[in-house]
Structure formats: structure tokens, C-alpha cells
Length: 348
Image 1 (cartoon, rainbow, N blue to C red):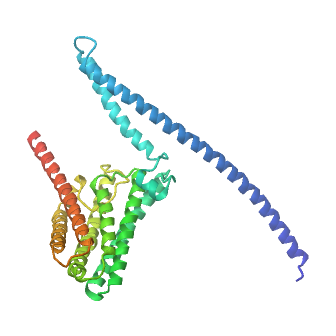
Image 2 (cartoon, rainbow, N blue to C red):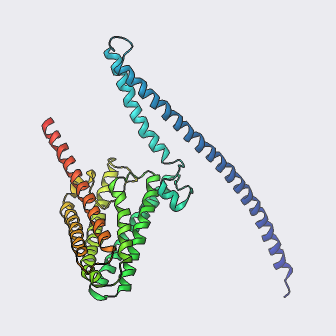
Image 3 (spheres, rainbow, N blue to C red):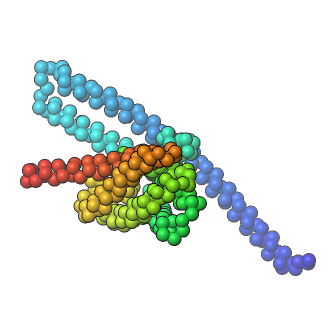
């Protein structure tokens, strides 16, 4: 193929432009690596400074306590007591400030993330990335909730195949495993989810895994419809209802500055839901007692002479743990809020 001089000249000029652009890319990348090294050094310096200050604050706390309990003089003056109280309040505020700082600093993974991901850094270093990951987590929960509801409805009313049931339980295992990993990453990035509302996903993962291994038989068929109906109610209806109303409530509270920007919707009831979301309580308690009913049903099945599957008692224990954790945690929140309201009424 022959090239015209004009066309060849254009190719040469384009190559020269590409060469200049390539040099600019190299310079920019070199600057990027330099800044990245500087950022890494700043991260290490900041993390070390926070650790040292925390250690000194801990020592100072012990010293102040000793001064109050065993004052060097017969009695501390009111001014000295006020000064100590002011220092203690400032130390509490500083502890909260350190937590906010560490949300943007790399940290060691917890045991679970270390086992799953190794020592890879999961800390997102800017607010936009944190919010994007949090929003993606919320969308993931919503989409999977809808899919699981449709899947459970299909297995319950349209097709009765053990292979389809196994696929549904496998999806549940994958869903809850993914939630535990994503929640651990969100916790590392400043989300304040803790306690039972984190642990119950581990129990749900175990329960779904046991259901997946339950072989076809008379006892499985005896519990199958009850299990699928429960999944439609709890995983489909209740979780969708919670997401819809909790997300709106969280948006309003964040706008008012009353909630942290990394707070998430949860599959339970927390104190911040008291205003405007108490109507969810009857649906939640009904689901909790359905878990108790599932547990009792499985324990009765375990007493049958034809019961040979270990999955029956393990599922029964798992549902009992879920009931006790969900019920008493929700009840504790309601009781605490009730007592706080009583105290406010007395003060008025």
C-alpha cells in the first residue's frame, strides 16, 4: 500500500504529538507516585501520633483519678475540681475526634476480614468514596431483597423441586456472607453498626448453610412450606418495609445533623428509629415470634422416631438464637427509650 507524502507527514506530526503527550503522562505519573509516598508517610505519622496521644491520655486519666481519690492536699478546691472535670470532658471529646480521624486512616483489619481478605487495606480515603460504597451497599440489599422474595414465592407456589430450593438456599448463603464482608468494610470506614445487628448475619449465614445441606425427605418436606413462607415475610416484606422507611428517616436525621453520614439501615430496631418508625415494631415482633415458632416446630420434629437428620436440631437452635437475639435486643431498645421518656417527663 502506498502512502501519499501529505498523509505520511500527518502521521509524523501525530506521532510527535503523541510523544509529547507521553512525556507529560510520565511526568504526571512520577508526580503522582511522589505524592502517594508523601501521603503514606503522613498516614503513618498521623496514626503514630494518635497512638502516642491515646497512651498519654490513658496515663493522664489514671493520674487524675488518683488525684481525686487521694488528693495531695487534705481536700481539692472547687476550682481544681472544676478544672479536672473540664479536662475529663475535653478528653472524651478528643477520643471522639480521634475516631473521626481514624476513619480516614489505614488500619489493620479485624479477624474476620483478615481471614477472608488477608491484610489488604479496605479503608476508603475520601468522603465521596465512603458514601458511594455505603449507597452501593444499600442498593445491593434492596435488589437482593426483591430477588429473594420472588425466588421464595416461586419455590413456594410455582415449582416444588429440591434443586430449586437448594439454589435458593445457596443464594441466601451468598447474600449473608456478602453482607458480613461489606458490613465489616463499612465498619472500618466509620459506619456505627455493632452488636447483635452485625452478629445475627453470621447466624443467618450458618442457618442458610445448614438448610442447603438438608437432604430431601419427609422431614424436609414437612418444614419446607413453613420455611419458604417465613422467608417471604421476613426477607421480602419486612426487610423491604424497613429499608423504605429507615432510609427516609436517616436522610432527614442526617440533614438535621442528628445522625452520622455513614449510618446504615439495619434489619432491626434502634433508638434513632423511635420518632416516626414505631409502627414497624408490630411487624418486627411478629417476625421474631415466627422465628420462635420455627424453632419449636423443628425441636418437635427432632423428637420424631423417623428423624435422622442432624440439620433439624441445628436449624432449631439457630432459629432460637435468632429469636432471642432479635427479641431481647429490640425489647431492650424499647425499654431504654421508654425510661428515657419517663425521665424527661419528670424533669419537665
